[in-house]
Amino acid sequence: MKIHGRCFCGQVSYEAEVDPDKVQVCHCTDCQAFSGSPWRASAFADAATVKITGEPKIFVKTAASGRPRAQGFCANCGSALFSTTPEDRKLYAFRLGAVAERAQLPPKQQVWCDSALPWASDIRDLPKK
Image (cartoon, rainbow, N blue to C red; front, side):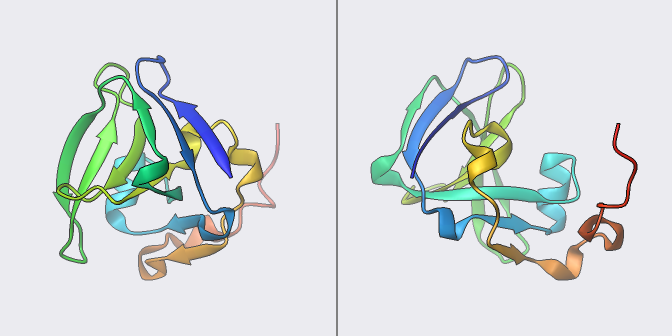
């Protein structure tokens, strides 16, 4: 599926091809901290399909798995856009919040569920305004 997205201010944008069956929600504490949310949802794209316009800022963090991850975000507005490996960017994980087609990409898997916040798994009964 072809996707496109951009940061909040529009300084960085992208296009890519993702597999809708590989969209996932991550509950790891790094994703919670990076996103400012109880989880982070991502859609994955092979690097050969990715076109980025603008210059994302890269922050490299070693994950709990021991693997370094390059976090791409807008240096101007701070929007989280993707993660990838720092050296050989073969696979990108695009942050669903910045993907225009996010409503068409429901997550199919959850990972790092041991770190999930207990209240975050079911918010259906919260009042809606």
